[in-house]
Amino acid sequence: MSFHPQPSPARPTLTRLGGNIGAEIHGITLSPDLSEQDVAFVYKAMLEYKVIFFRQQSLDSAGQEQLGARFGTLVAHPTVASAKGTNHIFELKAQKGRAANTWHADMTFMATYPKASILRSVHTAPYGGATLWANTATAYQALPQPLQELADKLWAIHTNDDYDHTDLVVERDWDFIRWSANVFAARIFETRHPLVRVHPETGEKSLILGNFVKRLVDFNLPDSRALLDLFLSYVTRPENTITWHWQPGDVAMWDNRAALHRAIADFGDHPRELQRVTLVGDTPVSVDGRKSEQIIDGQPNPRLLLETPYHWTARAEA
Ligand SMILES: [Fe+2]
Image 1 (cartoon, rainbow, N blue to C red):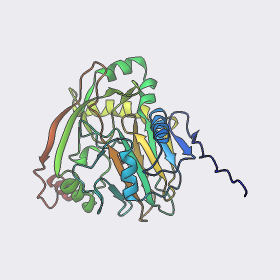
Image 2 (cartoon, rainbow, N blue to C red):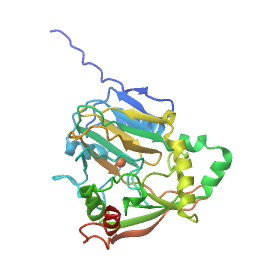
Image 3 (tube, protein in one colour):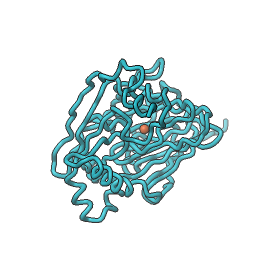
C-alpha cells in the first residue's frame, strides 16, 4: 500500500499592482465556503490595498451573493431591481456601449452607503471595457496642508437625482435619460456628507467625492465645482489609480469608503456584463466627529411620469 500525502492547501499570496492602490490575490478560490482565515486575509488585504482582484473565478450569481454575505450584510440597490432570480445582484449590462464612466463610489446618495462592493465579470467585450480605481485616502494625504485643513471643514450634498451635474449623460441619448429619471431616480435620496471621513476600521482620513456629489454646502455652484474638481484631481492622478482589464470570471472587491472607481466606455457596441453585490456600510463621521445626514429618504420623484424630463426636452429643442 502506498502512501499519498494530501497536498497541503495553497497559502494565499498577494501581488501588489500599483504603488498606491491595488493587489491581486493568488491561491484562493472564491466560494461561499471560504475558510475563516481566508475571509480574514481577503478583508485585511481589501482594507490595506483598497481594491483586490481574483482572476478567472467560477462563481455564479448565487455563489457571489453567498460569498458577499461572508464579509458583511448584503444590501440591494434602493431603486434598481435586482437581477432576476436574485435578491441582491446589481446587473451592469452594457447597452449601446454605455458604462458607468465617471468617477464615483457606489450609492453615496445614502447616508449609510456600502462599505464594500464585489464585482464579477460575466461577459467581456473583445476589447476595452476596463475599470479604474483610485485611492481616496492617499489622495487626502497628498493634499497640501492648507487644502487638507479646508477639506476637513467642507460638507457636500450627494444625490441620485438628475445626472445633469455629471458628464455621464450624452445629449439625446433618450433611453439613458429616461432610465436615469424614471428608474434610477424613481425615488430620490439626498445625503449631506463631510468631504473627509474618518475610516471606522483603519482610522485613515479619505475624501468622499464622485458623480453623486451635487454641490458643496455654503458655496455657489461655480465655486463648488472648482473646489470639487481641485480635490478630485488629487484622487484621479494616474499614479493614484489602478486599471483592471477583465477576463470572464474575474472578481474585484473594494473598500467603497476609501476608493472611487469608473469604467472606461471604449468597447464599441459590444456586450459587456458584470454583476455586483454591495455590503451594508456605516454612517460616515467627519474629522470633528459629526455624522452624515440623510436629507431626502426615498421621496417619489415628481418627474417620474413625464415621458421625457422637461429640462432635457428644452435642451434638445434648443
Ligand atoms: Fe460603481
